[in-house]
Image 1 (cartoon, rainbow, N blue to C red):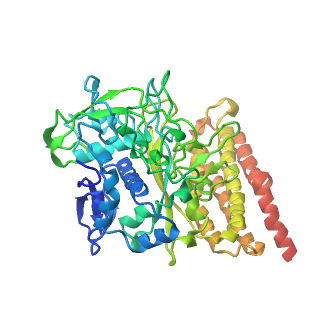
Image 2 (image 1 turned 180 degrees about the horizontal axis):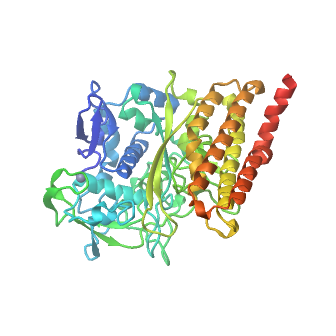
Image 3 (image 1 turned 45 degrees about the vertical axis):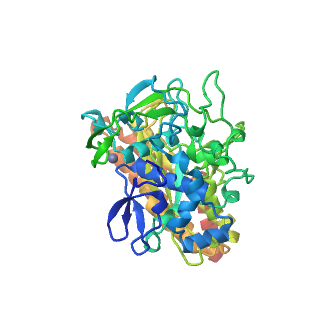
Length: 528
Ligand SMILES: [Zn+2]
C-alpha cells in the first residue's frame, strides 16, 4: 500500500458521488471534480487535509506567486503529479518490511503489542465512550493510516517517554478555506501551499536535497527523552514539520483478518488490530515553525511557542491573533495565514471568499488523553494593505470592550451568587456564554468595518456605538439569566441588586468601554 499511489482517501465529487482515490489522482475527472474529503471522524478529516497539504508542499511547491496562480487556474494533470511524487514515493509505503510511513525504522517485533484503537487520540476520554464498550475487530487500511498520521501530528505528552508532536501536544491548526461555490478540493488544498520563502523564514533551498532529512522514518530513530538527544531544526529539513514522528510505532500486518472496520464500517480483507510500541521517539526541540499553526511569543522564552487548542474552542475572542496576527495579545497568525491576509490581492483576480478553519484537540497539560475536539470557521475579510493598521486598531478597541465585559460579567455574577466570591473557584461557563452570545454581532460589525472607509472616523462612530450597546445589552441579559437560574431561597436580593448596578456602571464608566464611549460622545457633541 503506497499512500501516494494507491486509493485510500475518500472524496465526494460535485455530483455527490463518493469514492476512494489515490493522492496522485486528486485532480482527475475535471467534469466532476472532487470537492470535499469524506472522513468517518472529524479529527481524521483535519489530518487528511494536512496530509495532502504536506504532500504538495513537499513535492510540488510553486516557485513564486505567479506559479501559484497558474496552478490555481489550471490544476496539474495526473501525469504531472505522478512525476512530482516519484522522488518521494518510497517514503509512503505503509506495510513494507523496510522503512514504512510514520513508523519506526526498526521492526519492533519484540516490543509490546497494543490494540490498534489506542492510536485514537480520544480513546478512553469522556468525549468518546463509543469504542470502549464494544468488541473490537480492527481498522481498515485507510483508517489505520489516518489514525497513525493523526496521532503523530497531534501527539500529547503526559507519561514518561511520551514525546509530543513538533507543535507540542494538542496543537491548534488553522487552514484557509476558499468558498465551495467556485472551487474544488484541489483549491482547498492549494490554498494552503506556498512558495517556500513565503512560509519558512529560514529556508535555504536545500529543503529537498536529501529525503532522509524530510521523513524521519527513513533513518534509525534519534531517541529522545532523558539521556537521549533532541532533534533541532538544524538537524533536519524544514519540511519535517509536516512529517514529525514523536512515537515509535510499528503496525502489525501479520495478524490481519477479514471483517468490518470498526471506524468507517466498510468490509475489509485486511483489518489491522494491533501495533508494536516502544517509548522515546523523536524529541523536537528548538525553533521549529509549522506554517499551519499560530505561535505566541512570551517574555523570557527563547523561541515562540505553538498555540494549543484552547478549552472551549476558538471563537471571535481569538480572531485578531489568528487572522491578522502580531497583535497586543501576543498571538502570531500561522505564517500560511499571514502570507495571505497581508495581501489577498496577490492570490486571486476575482473576488473569492476565504474563511479560516480552526481545529484541534484540547489536551489538558501533562495528560495523554484529549478532552475534546473543537472545530470552527472564522470569517476573513479583504482589507487593502494600506488600511490594515487602522482596521486592526478598530478591532482591538472593540475586542478590549468585549474582553472587559466578559470578565465583569463573571465577577458580578459571582458577587450576586456568593457572600465571599473571592474564595470561589472559576466558572468558565459564565464568560464563555458572553463570547458565544455576542459572536454574531461581532461578525456583523467586522463586516461593516471591512467595508467602511477607515480614514473617516465619523463613519466608524455609529459602528462603535452599536457595538457598545450590543455588548452592554448582552452582559445585562446574561447576568439576569445566570442569577435567576440560582435557587430562589439562596438569593440575597440586596446583594443581587447591588451586583447588577455595579455591572451596569462598569460597562459604561470603566476601562476600554469608557474610552470608546468618550470617543462616541465627543463626536456627538462636536456635531451638535
Ligand atoms: Zn475504516
